[in-house]
Each structure stands twice: as structure tokens, then as C-alpha cells.
Figure: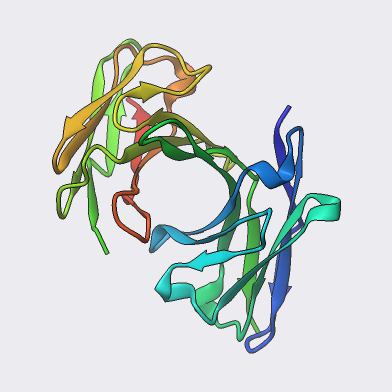
Length: 122
Length: 107
């Protein structure tokens, strides 16, 4: 069965970076893009961007350019997101999700990771 | 960015009740609208894609409709496992944006 297993919670200091992972199983990793979504109590769900797991090409929400860097390791079927220059505003739960594009106009996130809580505090 | 206004933000309801959650986009989104459910443990799953298509495995009591700027998710008869958060998502215009969510609570 399809699973996206994310890494564990992170506690980081302001100004530092964290790299969280999303390990896929149960399907051909390079056949689907992986997207990343931020969830906070105040801002709700925010789309960060996606990575083409085959080519490594990326597309970012303008708001997260310079903040998030998406990469992939095809050999381990794992997607990564690095968050840099952390501030308290980056404290959130971060989800990875598999992009499904069907015939015609379909596009949605059909499988989600369990989420990773990132806390930025001195 | 397209703003998605989701209403209500919370909704007390009873088992067996029919409920409707709405999402209004700040501009027309051509039916490019999905719905998701989030459980208290954080688990998120898709319910409806492209306005009205039921995701595989989702009970038929869930349905979606709408056009232009106005969309809705209806649950025809609430079951205990339906008390959760619900979010809409538009993908007509980049970046994808989500509604603020509706918390469906047991009355």
C-alpha cells in the first residue's frame, strides 16, 4: 500500500536550518511528484511547492522561495525539504503529499505523510 | 493569490444530520476544487476532487458540487467518524491555496 513516512519532530534554533524527509513506499517513486504543505494554527494550510521526483525539477510558491529547498534521492525513494534561516514563523507542521494528476482536469494530493512538527525556539 | 473563504469555521451537528460546507473563491476557478478531511491525529485524506468526483474508498454520503466561485461539500447523514476538519483547495491558479477549514463538531 502507498505510504509516505516522514521524519521525526525537530526543535531548532533561530537562524539554523532543518532538513525533513518523506520516504515513499508502495508505488513507483518517480511516477508521481511530491508536494509540500505547511500547516499552522494562524495561517492554516499553505502550499510550499513540488518536486518532480524523476528529474529533480522544482516549482515553489513565491512566498517560500529562499526558505524551502526541495530535493530527492531516487535511490531511497525519499524526498527532502530543507528550511533555512529559521524564525519562529517557521514553526509549523509540514506535510509531504503525493501529487495525483488524472485524465483531463484532475489534480489533487492523494496520499499524505503524517506530518512533521518543526519548532523554532531559542 | 486566489483567496478561498470557507464557511462556517465551525459547525456543531448531530449524528444522522445533513451538513453542507461552503467555499467561495476570490475569482472563478473553473471547478478546479478539491476537498480534504483532517482527523484530530493530523491524518489528511482526499474526499472529493475536481469539484464533484468521489475519491476511491470514500463513502457515498460525501458529495461535492459547485461552479464559478462557489463550491460546497455535503455529508448526507453524519457518522461518528465524520467529526473532523475539512478543507477546500483550489488549483486553478498557482500557487494552490486552501480554505481556512471547517471544524465539524458533535452537538
